[in-house]
Image (cartoon, rainbow, N blue to C red; front, top):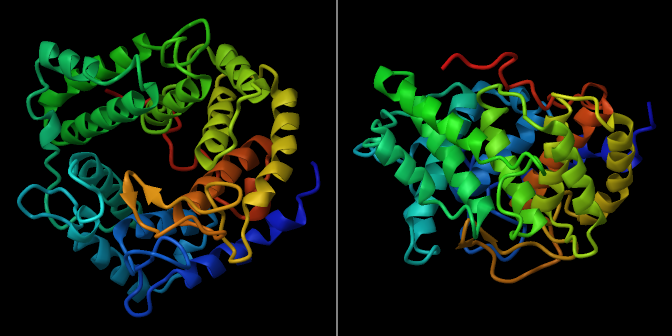
Length: 360
């Protein structure tokens, strides 16, 4: 096994140190987006990222029971008892006119974190968006309404969320089982067998790979369905890295490496070449680390927004929550390929995924 770089060994100390920098004193669970220049003292977007970081490095369980309960209580406080959705009015003041995508994101992320914490939401999750989608025609119209031809990344995200909502409804209402099957078949049918990706050839490669991450994140990560055309997926990611216009950001790097790890669940194609590629990316990830212990989304500066919500006053040379969480997830995917997660004490990439396809 290749020697683990010293900067990676230090992450078990650096990451909790960063989170302490951005944690609000008082009851546990309140985090802000970056060390300096934040427009809110704390908010649930950053709280969810903080949980993901601590859980990935296996540090969440070390918290005391009181801290865990305070954290869950904080996240639960954002739920609307009437709709079951999660919402922050402070975030609403910063996100402009179109609140729905942000409300959807918060509902997905907070409910997922609470589930992983072992603290269910206080009120039933209703997922009203899929209420009328038990009829095939209406469901297909809904899935086709997403911008597959112009924004496959966004379309893949929306479609994956639709599948998740149908799945959650199916757990308590049998009538949603068939719509979920139709949705999975629909998603599988949109994959390009030539490239293994989702999205048209007219879309930039980064858009198609990021769309593939969104779709496979649901199909493989949630439902345990192995990727089809894994060899073509792998070739597409190699092509992406060879593209002179490739822009290294948190999302692009994470999605590339995660997609490679997912494809390797279904094939050994180019396995050694993938290991060499991933090793070669680690020195390029290191400069995104900042002295505060976090990672910035862009190499030289933090990103000021998340999900169209402006959370920092201006770009600054500091770590930010989405950059830190994304690069931690990226490294977890890389370590899975390299066989390092166990050595470093991190959670395995597929530890929370089904070992066999979910029965639907």
